[in-house]
Length: 276
Ligand code: FAD
Image (cartoon, rainbow, N blue to C red):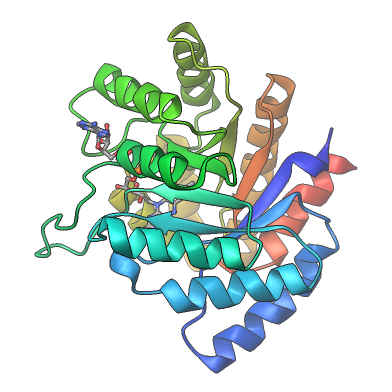
């Protein structure tokens, strides 16, 4: 098991208190020595400064950090400026996305899809950035079909991505199938599995509804049966997610990317079980 291919995602805090809490979380997660931390970017640039500030702080602490960059609502000029700022800070890695504007905002901007962003980054900055992109083993919710989504993924890879991180899932077979199909379509970049620890059932149901991740029926029923018993939910979540990670790694997943939600405990618990 190589924990050096594990990465951890944060969202940029909006308040001073959140910033302070994230510092504490980060200090705990830093002990795991992840390959890098990534920091999300609110679509439309809403967290642009917070994303940058968090990344800069992480890098000062001696860790590699990747800002996410979503292009929806952006112009070529606004994205060019952000790329220049990242370069000026010596940042060499980013996660390139389309993003989703809140409903009612339409799509706007000069980029329609992430493949256009990846192409633009390569045209503007050559090989400066290691570019990570998103992948959807259970299909992106807006895609016309799994095949169409795969074709779009392949297009995004060909635009110049170095690696991909998947949306989270609780069905390892969906991941293996996706990787196999991508490889058959000529994709050779690593496809790292995105892992969402289970700590809170209502939050999980809400997120999963939005992003199209399926919670297997037996997992949903078990979670529901625990009611408000948070300790049992966490213990069950730890077992389910760790076992899936073991299967993923044994089946050849090149790495794991943890959606930490700015919390240290669940990611640490899974990680420690995996490396012990
Ligand atoms: P795309 O690859 O552009 O795909 C979007 C949809 O369009 C898909 O259905 C695809 O099949 C289709 N499509 C793609 N290209 C074409 C084309 N050329 N023609 C027709 N259809 C096409 N969101 C944020 O706002 N900020 C973040 O920081 C963030 N981080 C994320 C990190 C990870 C690892 C993941 C998995 C998701 C993240 N998201 C983030 C969410 C992401 O922005 C949404 O899932 C968004 O809806 C799609 O982004 P994408 O880059 O995958 O888009």
